[in-house]
Image (cartoon, rainbow, N blue to C red; front, side, top):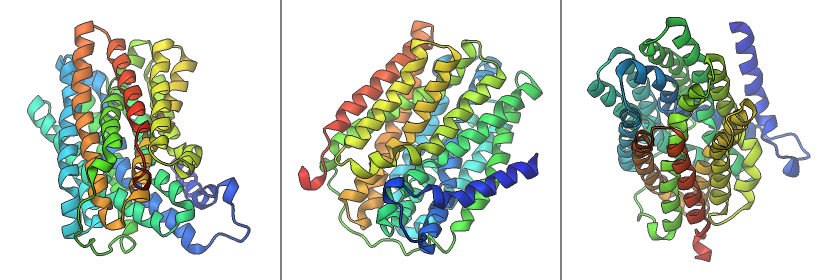
Length: 419
């Protein structure tokens, strides 16, 4: 079984350069070696968000029902664990640009990824709220470092390969899908194997899953150790105000789905096997997103790509509220999973299109800050709504509304030369 899985991974790795060729712009000559190498580099960089977000953040939704039952938490208590994670993420985003300027993006990315691994190990050890929340803060801090610095490095690779820039950015932001897929396979079956109250074993399994991914980041050594950018004036954030406001609402809206949907699936009668399938579909759809939405990222200007992709995310989020049948739940997972990190890629594409390279770290950093604020407020606010209404559907409807507001705000954004 392990040998078959390893062979499948190698085959997927070898296919990445071929799959990256869009049918509309496929070259008549064989693909240059440097282009294939760029795809491989970005695929390796994508391991950073796979750890920092796909596993260290989103897998909490899989562990949450068992933790809540074992520890006697309310929905607000459960949401607070993701709020503290988002607070750490916010801190990481706030200081990432300055840290990158001091020591380089590669070192910041690797340090952030290993901080997430340590945090997962701590979650496996502790059982009380204070140390658990401290571990979640550390995971958020590491995730913020890994995400911002990895995004800067991926944008740099995309800059030297403009024909495939949109695909390469999408490939990096599809990284969390790998973490979601792996955790979706591991966590439900770990909980089933060890029984109720075994959430510590689930966190340990997640830490073990993260180790080879963190090691894999070292494949980019030498490819991403360029000198830190020289100091330049910060970008004018007023020129990005609609995108920033929309991203704030997006962060608050999407995280509610990723926090409480497994609880919704479980409450709808979904067993361990279906929970694993549902989460794996989200992960696979996220991995597929570069091939699905590159044309939107490549061709649309202003905030239009952000608005369209956020709207698709909202449609995915509303489907379970219309019907909780198996086909509708799987359609929701596929649609939501395919679009929600393409939204993040759209913000980086906007930065890359409108700002000089020396300002990318600052711009990606401030976008990540407002995203982090939304993620920090969203889980606890939605949790309070769920507690007040005594159901999960009210909070999920609120998250859909937040996503629609985000899409409308993003639609007002204009590129700088057209502002």
